[in-house]
Length: 494
Image 1: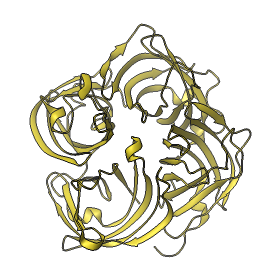
Image 2: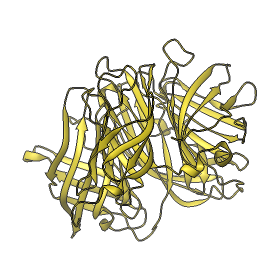
Image 3: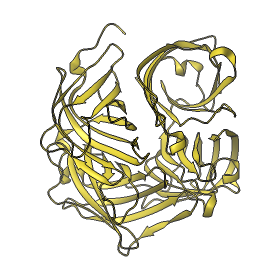
Image 4: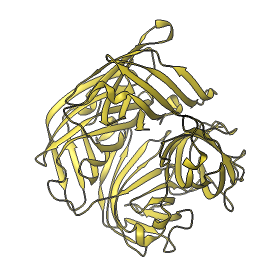
């Protein structure tokens, strides 16, 4: 890549969020915060909040520490600041985009947390409620032992109060509720707004008048990250992490129409109990009809489906829509789903299936670019990837970089990365040559397969991917049993 990058590629303020499990009791946990990097290898400010099984810890004073950066734009952020009751100083391994704006993360310290997430460069000029005010859509997710996902939208005012609130909740193995609006629903940001790290707090009151508390970190005027901070015994018995993005309102009735959106969904199958992961394409025509193409791995049970003519509704006043698929839960997806758009082809999608067949599948919709001209070379070059599991049985966390070369529909190259799981396996800065894999791709849809032998040729490893755009795609492992399903892998442009 032309030699080691300068440390000043990581320069400025970065908001980050990680979620996963602690090793002590296999408990769910999350970390959210902001670091300030000086471009010279030092961490000179920021703050961090930790929720470890509803035990809350926060930094006291500005963060301090150091970071490294190698020729693959990978490194480790090491904090020297104490963070509440967390035993050892936090350290986070990362893979960074070459422009320094975005990174994939994994915990890399002696606490042995199994955590992964992302960081994104902050815009300090947006650290005020006046700049943040507007229409937002959001996604909240928790992990095992209870997998819940909540989508919604609200309008944030400059004084911190919110209006036009709508929620939909999905609970794996239980069902769904929503749309919830009016009544006691409230989202309230503190009037003081975010501080110099972009940090602030807000509360959410649900339809049963229960309050949940969150800490948030602003990325820019259009988005922020958040984490629930309710202690043990509080109203909420989950640990939610959240992402919120501004809606480009006002919407029209045709905003929902789009050539295609790629979705990447993770959920929890309570019958296993294991992760279920699905990737695919959603195309909505005439505001009320959808075609879907998807691939699912449900604990090694593989589904590959195409359906047209599915019913869609859309409310242009909120950006909320619904999709109905008859018998869809039995073929690897959902009987119904709710989505909230941030723009045409972009937003959040969640399982809205009633009853025990609900698996709380949730994730982002991303507008696809390049329809009709997709090629196997979409996997060429350097791509970042991350993976993490929602359930204790699929608890591995991974981040890394693949440097691929596609020639005659065969992928070769190298991979470097970091891996950790609750079984005690921890390998930082792994490096390996890729086993050559055979590629196929549909030029029209961007759906492709990557098939290669395992080490020792004991089985064939099958992966399915959907291209979002140049060097950006989502991928899942569809290798059948006896090999276990792996968590979803998100690939981002390098």
